[in-house]
Image (cartoon, rainbow, N blue to C red; front, side, top):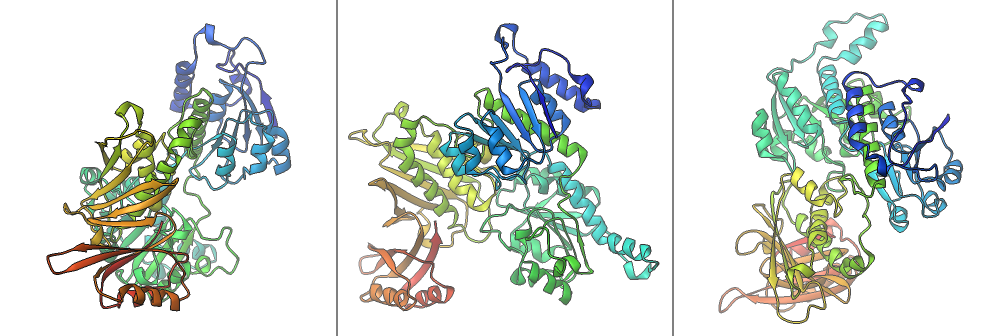
Length: 597
């Protein structure tokens, strides 16, 4: 299906409602208000057919969003475009809107010949767009992550009740001619404990609805807001306490390397026997084979999932075929209302980008002046990597709420805008434990949404302001550390770094000076200073065929007679658990930590 409507660049000058289905009720009023607010004075209106944007909508989009776009630009609406046809069409377009299924490859950006200014993804994902190619072609990429939270929460509650009362299994039984009432005795929800893992967005909405069902709700999340939790009567707990005390567990964590298969044999073993599991977020959060084993053993009594690791699943998929499991085909955000709201959100984001503004839902790096990026790029890499290093030092799955960033520079304050560097630190802190893409446009708002307070301090240094920064320091307050050596005198996790020859270096961990390239695989050891220690560590790594790229040994006094050392080691490959265990067994080693930055 292909349809084209031509309008002026800045507004619609006529009413085309007679040829389309008009939105109904409050949605229609909302769209009309948006049109009125957007319409500029007559002097600003396009005066010729040449002065217009063209937006290609390459997929299904709600009529409300299409109406907004048609009031602003020429809309080319084409469904089921093959890749070669998309490339052929894109050269005449300023913007492209796609669903989460259509791939936007480097070829698409190349075929646009520089005209494409923004790509909008009608959904919360980003995996289908080549972000590197978008950056190379100076094209913004935006998505719509907020439109479907309510619908996903409703689907979660629907699965919760269906699972607790065996509704799906009972319905199949009746349709096959069996009326087995006693076989499908269910469980009441009132008074039971629901653990919400991931207490933001959808998780918060699920908690509210579950409270309305009379459930006791506990929650865990790295960015869980204690204020919001208290407001709706939810108890914030640790991850281990949440899974140990729950009758029902609902997953709403973002999928990251840290949360991949977070429910596995080890965590299932810590749960209450008979627990019931819900997942409407991402299939990769659960080890599916481990869940099947937990179902067979009775640790998990029932499960309901809307997402799987492999989609569509094979016909013999053990979890899908399990009699105690309800499976739905990604229906979380599939309601008429959610799809319409999604269409509005993505349409407005695309229009904002075309008007020269930067939407808060930008997912790639927006266009910063080239000369600024060239100068700050190595320092931005340092900021990102310091944030990433610091957050990986936090023990367990605990959250954090207060971060201090210190900039040491010989430049005057008006000669160093720290917004980009601050966003880099936020990016490093948040992206390893979240699916959110952070950039300098949305960095502060992302931190605020998660209750993360960022304070900044500038240290004025004498000397030439040739370089933007002499050093950068990140402190995370009120958290437990995996590595006691990373704690400063105040008890905060504290790390610092510098840029040397255009590369980021880690120069401070806690009260210890270190010196190691801040990227890749890093092993830190705090030890009692004694002869032969370096050789022992090197022998363990050598026997495991782990190559040492760099090693630095820094010694500090504990008292007048005793010394401790901090050994920073850059290795080419990740050591095995057995190799790391052997390092920890060296008598002089007080503690160690391995991090992949």
